[in-house]
Image (cartoon, rainbow, N blue to C red; front, side, top):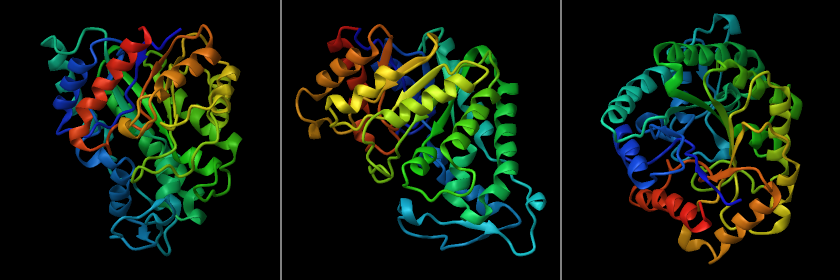
Length: 349
């Protein structure tokens, strides 16, 4: 069957949450189940938002230059435990997500009350996994020492948010990017960061979300300066991670968003989709909305739709971009949103 739904992975490079929500609601009037706030402002560059928190945390010291002009994946600035400080001594500050999302939720609720956002659509929040910030910003020898307390601080932030807004109005996405960088050899792995260890961590993230709140995973290969940390050879690793998390989790994974580089149209890339083993409640989204349509060979999206449909058979599925739209040029965002609608329409949704 053709794609019938649209998913937004979080970031949208527009002025503010209200602009994001209005643009989505206006330009994509069907197929939408959840609307994010666009991760505007300080959250736009994903876990760079947390790097500032690490720098503010007593007991942590900078292990590299703070003001690198444009660090790449291989040279991210790092922190370490300060001399003489034990992991139990570290007291994490307010990590900031709950505060930002509570403010955005008030905008969401007002726009829904005004009829701009249709009834039944949920407010979607996005959290990086604990491992994302730890692996990105902490020196390898201190990652396992700091991860437990940081994880609890991040989970407590989520708990505080979900205590403040109605569960019937919200959905939670965990952004899974650093995990794929580790598994693909793009980031250095510390101890206890094997495939099984990573799956166990993702299960813990999913299970932290109460069962009456939909929860999903965004499977990402990065978009720093519009570059992946590694080009995926196929969907095999994403499918294997998805199957394992779904099998081990005590609650449903409500959606999965898969990375598809915009010019991949070879059958071998999509073939692993035939091995997906998910409960019927799990929504599946493929990144068939290209960031740069002008750079895509004509007919690519149509061929991608055909290949996905061939391998998913009777499974209902939808479309998304690879990594949100936080790093798209602002003037490109309206056309990208329109493209979601147009792909659904031309695919027969």
